[in-house]
Every structure is written in C-alpha cells, then in structure tokens.
Length: 370
Image (tube, rainbow, N blue to C red; front, side, top):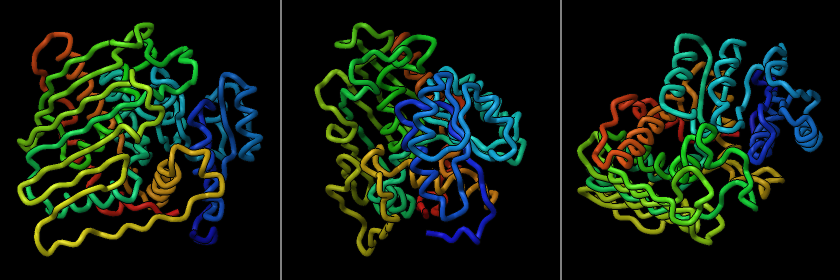
C-alpha cells in the first residue's frame, strides 16, 4: 500500500447511498494510507446517508448532492444513483469541477451518454464508469493475453449469463426495470457486465441482431430474457444469452465466457479461467492484486476497491480513467441497437462510439495498485 506522503490529500464524496454504495465507501477507505478520505455522502433519504456515513467515517452528510458538489474539500465523487439520475449528477459534477466515477449503465440512453462524455471531454476532469469485473485477476490475464495475440485472431466469442439477483430481495425496487427510470431490463442491469467483458476482450461491435422476451418478471416494463448476435468490428462474431428468470442468486455461478481464435481459446466460468490453449511459446501473464480489506465480504467482490484505486491514480497522474466513459457510451450504443433490433425484427447497426474500446487497451489500466 502506497505511503500517504507520496500524494497530497484527496477528498472523495459518494452521491447515492443505496445498495452498491458500501462497496465504493470501502474502496475509498482502502486508500486512507494514500491520502484519500471520504469526506461527504449525499442521498435524498438523509437517514440512509447518515447510516452510510456512520459505517464508514464520513463527517459530511447531505440530502442534496449539489451541496456535496459545492464543497471545496471534495475533488472526486462516485455516482451511485438510479440510471435516470446519472446524467444530471454527472453534468453537475463537471460544472462543479469534480472528477466522477459513475455506476453502470452510464446513462438512461445513448443521447444522455453522449452528453455526459462531451461534458468531460474538453476539460481536465475524468469521467469513468464502474465495470468491476474487469478488475479480477483471470479477466485481466485473458485481456492481456488476447492483446498480445496469444490466441491469434478472434473468430468467435460467446457469453451465457443467468442470475435472479436483481438488487433487492423482494423485487420491490421503485426504479429497476421501470420505463423512464432504468436503461433496460436484464441487458442493462446484470448482463451489461458480461457484454462489457466480451467487448473488452474481443473489441467493439458493428451491428446487432437481438431478441428480447419477458418470460417470468411480467410486473416489469423490460425484458428478463435476451439473446444477442453481434458482428464485431474485427469481422468476428459473438453472442450473448441472458436471463434473470432462473433461481440462481448470484451473478457468477451461471456465467460462462468463451473466446475462440485462430491459434487458441479461453474459457472463463464465474470470472475464473477454467480452460485455455495458446500459441506455442506464449506464457500467460502473472497478475497479482493487493490483499482485500478487512470488510471485503461486504463487497461485490473486490472490483470496486481496485477500480477506485485506479480511478484515483488516473486523477493524480492526469491519465484517462481505468474504464473511460466512452466505453460506457459504446455499451449504450450496443444496447440501443439491440432494443431497436428486437423491436423492429432486423439487424441494427452500431454507429456511435464504435472505437470506444481502443481507449482502454493500455496495460497499466488493467492492473490495480491499492
């Protein structure tokens, strides 16, 4: 863990104190020895904000995030709000001169995502998006190996994801799966993580043919089951099949990703590399991540901890964030094309942010240092 003498102090704030916010708070606290401090939290439900503050030692509590953004001792924030509030909070952060790390999906739709990217594009501020599965050792190893050409040219990639985990035990969330509040159904909530991994490994998407169905969760406005056929910009093909109608209650037990290239293949199950073959003479890279904080059992794994460390490092070094907002915008473009395809029963082109993933291929952004 780096010494706090190496860096000036950095004040951090959390906007939105719901289900995922403790993962961000623990990630910030893990950097205390490096001069990072959680100085304020904000939520319209001030009781919930106070609970998070009490649990994680934040001295500042606000019921209006604009008050948090007005604080001189806050330099960066995590946005942990429902989908339909991401845009306004991000634009307010840019206006206030704060770096922002936004939970997925980046926005409610592609137009909002583009507006968010543009708001941070011309300044010295970073806008990143949370994709915590990128910060798992075996996923990092596979990403680096693919980049090194270890399996040659990717011909086919596939992801299967099944999970009933929806963010609240009784399915009573007032915004998940609701039109105008959520960006979509299973595709925008859970499967987006594994779509992101597919594209991080195999590259951006040129076109989508999609089928969406509501087979179980009929009380919601969006799909609970979907199948996507993707044409990659590289010329390869990929598929994503997903549902949250099954009884599996986590995001990993029912998840499998395969990559098949001209010289080898990778098979990942639940973020673990289960099988592989690489070109002769290639050795898979070693990836060492820092030990977990004491309260790691309260996290969605350790991805948030490692991504927040990288996000803070990018601020201090003046480099792009570990998962740039353009990657999130490209994901929104793919989702937009998928929903259009399913509605119109035709293949839909992905026209915006097609080269977004090229911004995140540098090796230093795949390795976390707390």
